[in-house]
Amino acid sequence: MTTPAKSLLATLAVAVLSLSVSMSAQAQNAPATPKVDERQARQEGRIAQGAASGELTPRETRRLKHEQHSVRRAEAHAKADGVVTPAERRHLHAKQDRASRHIHHQKHDAQAVPPAAKP
Image 1 (cartoon, one colour):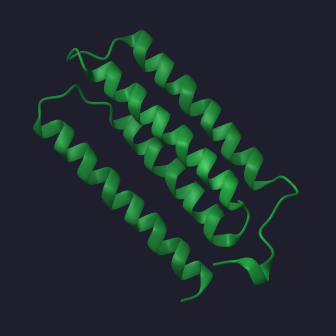
Image 2 (cartoon, rainbow, N blue to C red):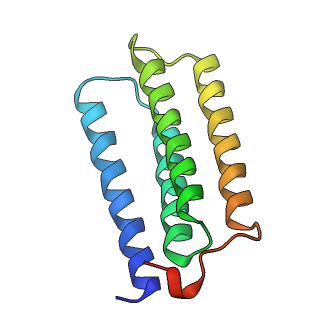
């Protein structure tokens, strides 16, 4: 399978996963955070695309995925009491802003996976 096809599949898989997570959260009457969820899905797609294209090394990919996991944990913590306050939303958006900058920086630094070493 070609690299563009792999990255498209990875992006679609992330979108489906985030949609199912979003739907299960709504089914449990958890407070909605659709903008946070949409942005999370886009950022995970950017990471998947960077890993597939070789712009991200395996180590960079792991670190960025860990950072996304941290955002998901913060979102779950904000939703735990049944209300996501404006301060909690600001905190989530700040974490996502920081993660987005990290993704951009890692995708555009001089490190890349050599073509022969790509999985």
